[in-house]
Length: 147
Image (cartoon, rainbow, N blue to C red):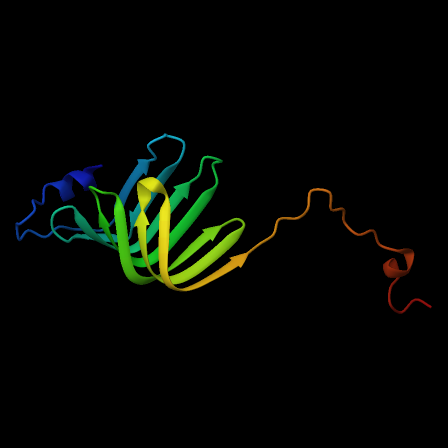
């Protein structure tokens, strides 16, 4: 939270620049059922409430306590509105899917992400709960050189 205090000390309209080695902030949805956490490898004040992040990682925690992780080489984040955007590539990872794209807008408190272009998604299907491992037949269990 020291970071937020340092960034808050930079007033709008001043020429002061603040650069930090690491950035962290977090929030919770209005219904308090889900949350998010944003980190960056470094942060530079862009004036007012705006912060330019490098190596941004945004983690959404859903109501079901699942994690969705969004990573991007950079992001411009507004600390007041809890929104971010970038022209950079991004990667989204979840246990059941991954998404890649270029350019994005994010509304952290609403847990909304809009990917602007070149979207590619891979879906990983979970195993069926009633699926049983295939039993080996006696022939399959024999070594190949057995007559």
